[in-house]
Every structure is written in structure tokens, then in C-alpha cells.
Image: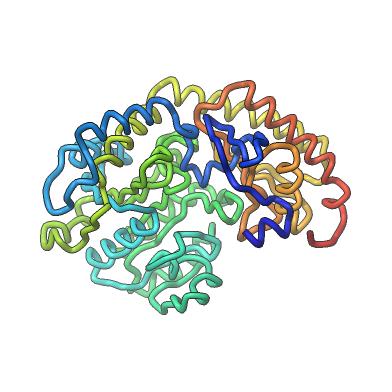
Length: 399
């Protein structure tokens, strides 16, 4: 909270509904952060609340030692919806961070190698192997630096190939669109497809971290679908929970899941794949894959594309709009523009988060089901915030 206090966006959330919430003093805010996509379908969506209430009449956490109907049904759904239907095995965990751990372990088992490549601007959680794969600051803080993890620049095929040629890489851990770095998009044509080809050529697996980009945010169910890539492993979380019950999942192809045949107890978790979480997650998938939701994502993405382009034309403090579907970031010319704009948005009733690894940018995360009124209202408030922040954004001082 100290960081938020310092930039003037102190918040304690009270009531919440749809894509709006109210602080404990009753002030309304539009939610354009969504806790990283956890609330893709909004806060406390009635269909998801009903699924949870109905589920608790029969199910509870369950027992991780035994088969379970809700886990089996959700696993079947995820396998069928995996890229090209090629990832036929599913492991459930309580969080995205733990799912990243399982993905890395699976790649190491499948290849017999230890070294993991990840991007120097990526975020894969704050604990375990994910911390070692993520930003150096966190890894150092918790003494999690590890020589078996190598950071390479995002969107640099030459750097990737140089490391893969050493022959000791188990996997590329790919945050498909690095969120904390301002939703950076690759400039290299077909970057992800070519990265996957390099991994195949050198015997390494391609792990897609879709914790933030998955479940329809980019206009396809998985971001890799839009990039024409079938990964060996895919990690999903956050929005899979519906914002109601913690659950994440690792989708594995035949090679990456081989350890499950050797030792089915190699990974177990008391709360991984809670039966209640599975009930909610099945309804999440039904909603995210419906034609109505997919059409709404396309329509809203187009509305924001046009609206943000118009604002960028009028506000010279805006350097760039990055967008793929409803994955959006606004980059300012000012090196600390993100926190400055976040403060002015907060004053105008919008909750949007600056990017921790690229403080010149702010994430703009509309939900999958927002309507035209929300789009218009959020753009109006953004316009006002940019006007009010202009003096600070045109200076060269940090906030």
C-alpha cells in the first residue's frame, strides 16, 4: 500500500458488481484493472454465483487422492479447447504461480535438461520457480536467483537461437504478451511461430504463459491461437476462477505429460482442482466461448481502438497505444507517465494500474462483457484525466 499511498491512489474496495466497484467510503470506480483479468466476466457475475451456490449443495474441495467428476469434466473441457486440441492432459493447481512451477518441472522431465529461458521483461509470479524465471529484482530479494534460468530480450530471435544452440535448454517460458512490461507486442513478423520452430529444432519445449492473456481477452480463446502457435504446455489461471474460487491449470501435450504415467503422485495439491472451483470454471469456459461473448469482445475492441486513437491524436502526451483485442496499454512520453495518469484516473473514478516494469505505461483492461455505456464513460474519464495530467506529463520530473 505504501506505493499507492505515495502516488495518491489509496484504495480499500467495498461493494462490487459487474465492472464497477465502490470503495469503503462509497465512491464508485470503473474497474479497468480486473486484477490481471481475474474479473474478465465482471465482479460476482450472477451465472457464476449461481454455479457456486448450486455446486456447494453437492460438492466441496474434494479429496486430491481420488478421481472426481467435476475435475474430470473440466479437464475434458480444457483439453478440447486447447490449441488445436493438442494438449490432452491437465493438471490443476490453486494459483498461476504454482501452475508455472508444474510447467517448468514437466519440461525438465520431458527433456532431461534443466535450463529455462524467459524474457527479461516478463512476470511469472512471486514464488517458487516462477520467481526465478521473472524479474531480477524479485528473484534477488528472496534469494531465488538460479543459474538454470536465463533471461533474454523479448522479440529477439537471435538471442533466443544463441541460447538454444547450446543444447541444454529445457524450455522457453513465454509470457505471450508481457503484461507488467506494458503489454509489449512483438515487432518481428511471426515472432512466436518462429520462436516455437526454433524450440522444436533444438529439442526445447515452448511453454505459453496465458495467465493474463487467455480466455478470450485477445479475440481468440488463447493468445497463441491468434499467433498461429501450438505450444507444448499452456498455463491458465486468474479469469478461470471467475473471481470467485481460486483455480489454475496446466495443459500438457503427450510429451510434456509423460511424467504422469511414471509417477501420478509427482505433483499433488490439497486445494488444486477444488471441486467447487471446477464447477465455477466450467461455467467460465461456457461463457468465454459463447458466440455472444466473442462478438462482444470484437465489437468493444473496435470501439476502444477508434476511441483511443482519437484521444492519442488530441493528447500529445500519449506516445503509443498497444492493443490486441481487449489487451491494451497506453504508453506516455513521460518516463513515469503511468503512475501520473493512474492518479488522475483514480480522481476521475477509474481504477487502472501502471506497469511495474515500464512505468511510462498504464494497463487498460476492459472486461469481456462491457457495454457501450461503459466504453463511452471510460473514454470520457480518460480524456478528462489526460487533460488534467497534461502539465505533469509534459514536465521531466518524476511523480
